Length: 113
Image (cartoon, rainbow, N blue to C red; front, side, top):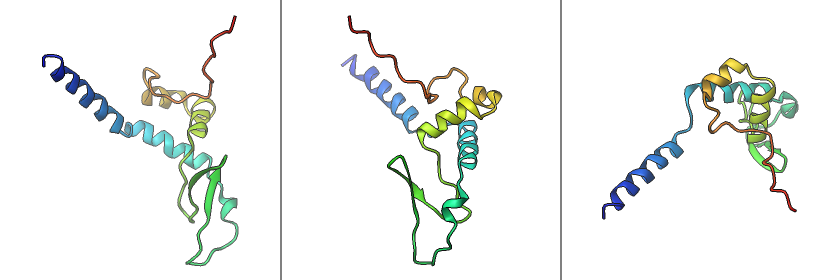
């Protein structure tokens, strides 16, 4: 019973962190990423009010294309944006310890001897 209460507290703390969508700085970076990857050429042809245009990136659904609406970046796009295009000061404000920051680098595989 003594271990049950701390275990429940730890699970509650981690679930609260997992449900957190991010800080305002991270939301700002995601918005800038969406702006940089916005492709207005995909909505080149006008659509009727009852037509839908769906956008896919690498076989994954990104969202519905609407005039004036930005589609969110994929995880790979966001990581590439943070590595290459974003202001380093903003990235450091959003991810001060780099914990939880998406990266484009692949994990090293263990060597097989």
